[in-house]
Length: 521
Image (cartoon, rainbow, N blue to C red; front, side):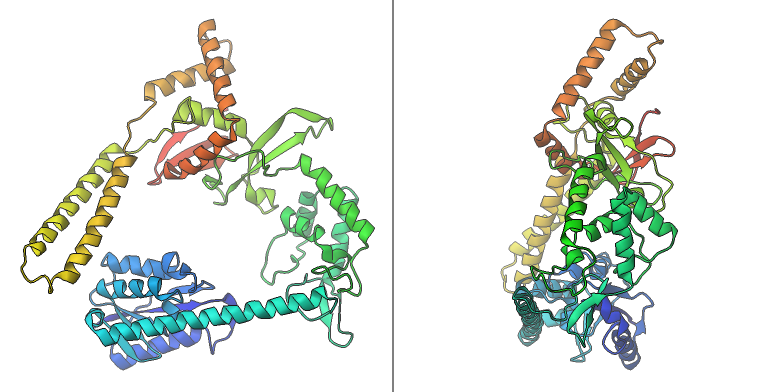
């Protein structure tokens, strides 16, 4: 019995609430088709809820991408069937992108059944002119409908915005949740959530930090404004509320949009000044600073990201620091979300050890530590596969009747090009260790000796060490170098886990292998 796999895509998660047009309807159709055809419906359903088909996100990154990958790896059994409600579920991209992807999936051995037309497309249909035309026309219709719908929505939004800017007060969905439209008065009035906003304003003007306010609201289990699900307050949520002009009655330049504003213009200006003044003494990203570990610095406890922060003011003395203190902190903690990984990491110390010990003393020449044996095996496998494809191409070229083998030849050439690209990438990724383990051990000894002057440590060693560190710090002040390193690091390592509780950070290679643990403090 053939196995069928249902695929459901909804452009918006809001559609899941409507069982007549959403996920339930598509799943029921899939079950009915399998019953009619005598197919076994796999319990594994591929869902892309709230994923765009117009931009191809489902096919390139979503569950459909996972299905295509499994199909090409032969992990879906013999003659698998993909169940689609319509062509638009597969893609709403233009035909130059969607049609080749559709045909390529058929050629991989997957049949595609479209329930709206009750037709099953197979690999053989890719060779039939009428079927190819039907596929092209259906995909073009799906794209054109989506483009037309998008254009109408955009035009409607632009018309609504023009009315608001002209001074009209109309119902719109993008106003803060502490206002609601009064149909009788044809204006916006305050909701019960406005009391929470007024409290936030008062607490902030009384000297409480954004973090403290969010922490208090979470402790009291006050629902976050604007979210139906259980979402925690964060300092960024509080900041967003305090920065919104709707507080004193303005929406898209319309000064009479809200009948009863939360505060007056003078109060709003005071808040804005305070936000700007206090920004110098809180963790933040700076335009004059490039975070080299962005995207790969992770919290091992909550699996979230580590955020880079900076302090310019000494919180005890109130005076400016001689040098900005930059640090890493779990982003959950920064946003007042519970996580035990609460303490900060000194970013300067991390960078010094990362480049001077784990990598090397020159951050411009990046150290790549791979398992060369495994890399060589992959190169050998790819080369062997490439040789097989080249041999098949040669055999086909020797055939006198090229008309029968033209399609096969074209497919094999694509495979050869793909394998060549892969082989070149593997060869480029190979590199010997720039820093030998003995040098790392020696450097650890020097660093430990500097921290513990009582140990045996010659003056010459100390001078060379300090000179190297000074040179490294100067290079790391160059943002061009920092940006170069940030762009390269994700191709070298998968992540760095920062455990503030135990005081260490670990580096993982692209295979998820632990390849370095920082020195203890």
